[in-house]
Image 1 (cartoon, one colour):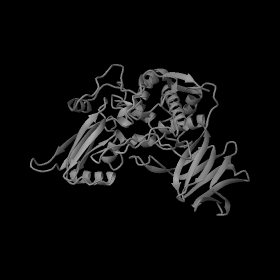
Image 2 (cartoon, rainbow, N blue to C red):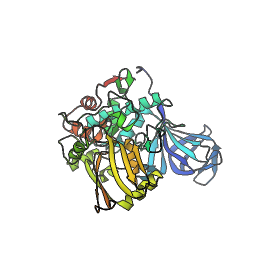
Image 3 (cartoon, rainbow, N blue to C red):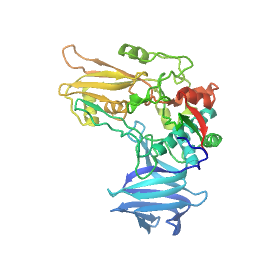
Image 4 (cartoon, helix red, strand yellow):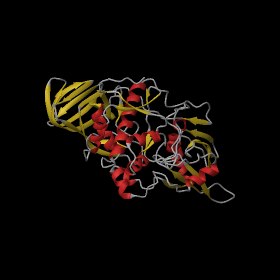
Length: 443
């Protein structure tokens, strides 16, 4: 149940995990294990079952299974070469700067986790600036702060009690998997898209995100006395999706499909309707052609993804066979057809049949489908499939025409930012995307 009057949580964020070594820079004084002060360049190496910390002169400063570097007031630390967008199409490495304490924790496999210990509200300032541009409309940033705070509080409440993210197949002809929040063992949340983007103070280029967090301090979304598990993604494509299309078969009343517009739109109910929907250009919030507005909304590397509302991917048959083999570990033989079996109301495919000369298999759910059919991820699973080739042989090419960017459940970030630009308040935005949710102040 939602409890009011609580204290602001201190959380732990996994910046990098299972690393053999890490280098960085302490920008100010840090107290190492309560023994001595350290600043400047450092190098950390995992050796056997402990962590070894070296200064810029390669002098060993401390070694233990768990090292805590406590920041002095105003001090920050830089970690070099942090991987962001892990396994997504925008994956890359960046040097990133973080406030708060720095922790190194050894793992049994001889690697280590790099962890940032930080107050929740400071974490949120970075999340909002990392997920979206700090120059985005103010009411959108406030909505994002409330939503992100809710997601994190729900995550902390559900930690170690969530349904497993992978469902064992009933038989080898059907593989149904979903990827829920990762139940991290030695930190609360990770710093990447699998939880919430957290890129330290590197992306904070204006004071607007900090203002939005301050203005909404302690505010969360609730439903039925519980903190909302407030999911979000980049662009719905015109219709949001039901929770159960992407995750476990549970109806979540505030995570149901709605139109990304003032007016109601009919849900996708058949393959014919899916084709009409995906090849259309409806008047909805996330269907914006305003490049200036998008540059104000999206962080720099997200602006590289331009055709997110409607998109197309084309493969030769052999190319797609190789992708399926590499991504699934399964050889279907000569690929004959790809057929949607079940869709959600946004057009996102929940179950998909892949048929080849050696194997025919049904896969799901939403993210597993996106992973099997792309070297990284498809933008979404809302797509229709067409093929071309001789009438008396297997297809030579496959084309996927799609809609939207992300799983489609909950808040559409681009749609919500467009709503704010049109004058909607944070409260109106959140009530639009999270059906029946209320706002509550818990601290």
